[in-house]
Length: 464
Image (cartoon, rainbow, N blue to C red; front, side, top):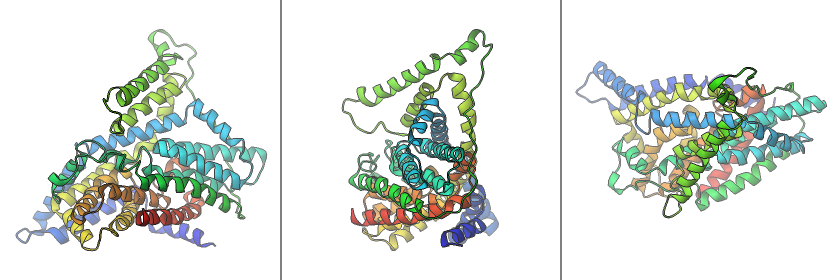
């Protein structure tokens, strides 16, 4: 058994499912708050009730950084999946399949295509990659050709290691919203809010020299790496049989119901939404900038695109029914993350963590330490949006005290979050469901991506 196979086996034994991890992390945070922040004049029982109150207030957080944000992320994932299930995207996938003749060149093509789509939208990239991998498996099964299907599955999952540096990246996009930085840090009371910027434009984060260089290196290195891995001998696993995207029949639609099956109604609506988005982004502002690119704008364009690309409203809703299950994890886990933040803020634990971080950091080492800590946190909080809510205030407060760059700090968090997705199976669940693969089939190869990504991200944070 190789090292990567041993790692995959050990990983599966050590860590439970993502929701269970969130519960364990909640209990751990509760205990840490009790141990390190209990006032001398309070009994343990009374302070436990206080902490429970902090948890509950965070659990149902209705601010823009709470349940509202959770809905934004759910909508983004579902719309991305709906677009991936449209016929135009399916035809595009068929074009990509044409040059796929060996495991090596297929791994290269799938990796490159998934990265490019994921830089546009993480939800679309995740489902697009999964469907592409499935179609590759079906093609090789039909031709009775050998294929390292586990490697192809890992290649299709690589988008989760690049997405946070793309235009749907939660942390940089959220930081670009007016007032978001101050409101996030003010909520924990550990920084001088008057000295903080109201927002950080994505020209300083997503379109910075740092991120542009990192993105280009990832686009070049990762497909070539998967190509080389694809040349190695492999153990064959069963390939999938063909599946088709279901669409709803409408043999006897009558009256107003015909609108559901009209070839024009949904498409016209989608086109109008996209025209309005263009007006809002390009024509309405006196000076063109990238400030319009926030979660709401992205979701607006995804909604318009999803309606435009599907044959009719009925087909759109059928795809939505298939896509909605992917958002389950966000629905049931985000409130727990907000509860964790509520405990950390209400007890003052978050301030102690921030102070400790400052004590061991310098302006030079801070971005790398931020990256490593974000990678660790992502193992327990497998969501870029949830991690921004939980860890963003700590890192921004520490950056203010040290004098470190806010944009670089945000990108360090983004890189760390996406980096350990190659070890965290939470976002792989939709891919595994679509491809029929198991986590142990892809983990040996995502570990290789994890190592390569770590070297790229740390080098960039130190040198750029």
